[in-house]
Length: 54
Ligand SMILES: [Zn+2]
Image (cartoon, rainbow, N blue to C red):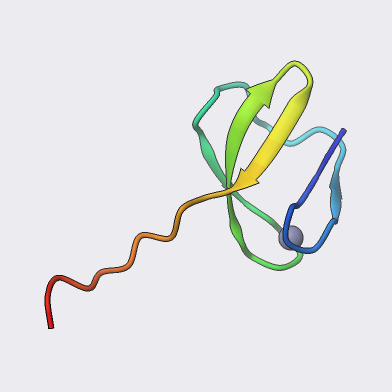
């Protein structure tokens, strides 16, 4: 069991099995990175802003 670091919605068993995989919280739509799978741990994915310059 892991919870969204943003909204604390609990994920019981997402279809995730790979560390560094990016999933989306179904509740707050934050992108979450899988940082551990045993036990499942999630972290907010770094925001990739398409801001190349100005
Ligand atoms: Zn969330």
